[in-house]
Image 1: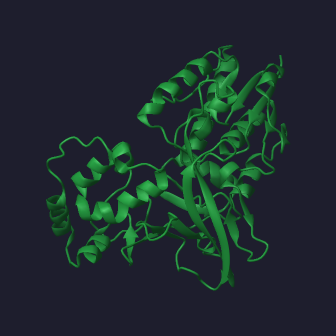
Image 2 (image 1 turned 135 degrees about the vertical axis):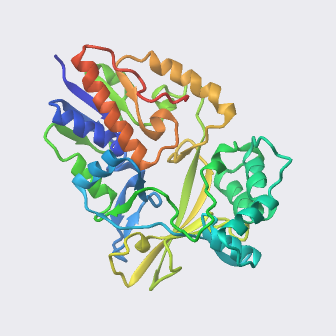
Length: 384
């Protein structure tokens, strides 16, 4: 029986699936088009400052999934890290997500939690009973002033669309807290791999049975050379964009260095239109256990992804759904290929969800192989 497996992409999806199948006795070949592993999570030391840099923008590990936390801790020591985001708007600095401090600072009040909750409810537009758009959701639950200060312009810069064009569901992911908790995430487990994400991915793949090919694109025409292919690239690229290009946002980074401490925090968002960038990230603050005399920053700009750009965020507008449905239909007819990860399923996935789904995918493959059943094109329905 042919047991060779091809995995396209050396990010978390590819690395985890490769590890699980190699440990089960399969020979696995990983094809990565870039000169490095770890995908957009790739990190490396900056030669000039010594700072560990998240090359494609910051990644903070956070999860409530026990098996994922246990899994990543097998391969790296995770150091404590809490993401505390600040926001600049109207020449003032505030805390995000919006919490009791943000509300009191913004409105010049000294509210207690119940008072702030009552006050915020009074600002909401009660005429919007069933919010449909991002703007509806914001106006209904935080009111015009907070919406315009923190969300309206930032959303245009981040997504290239007016908030009236985006679904309400996007804002539902941004909590309002009526206490002074400034932890950006609410998950039980949070941290950073001590030696960076690339080291973590390298250790996941460090097992007999895995062969890595860097700077190597995988041609779908060669899929017949393998018992199965796991594909974590853009689903539309696999089919040579036969149904058109799915829309993504991409990021540009303006890198600059300094001495000392540039902004005193890892992430500061620029929520108004005083600056064209969405945020500045100071990377040495992502490794607070390290000490560096010099520092390195990214100014981050978001724009529409073009043909030769790196795709970051699937837009997933309602108008894109029919196009995605056509790709999913042909993918389900593709024999011996499973589409995985953010790009392969055209869904916004955090790292922990990506790892969890990769573990599920490997389990499903081994189960199908044992029962001589067909492995599905998707373990998680991308249309759900």
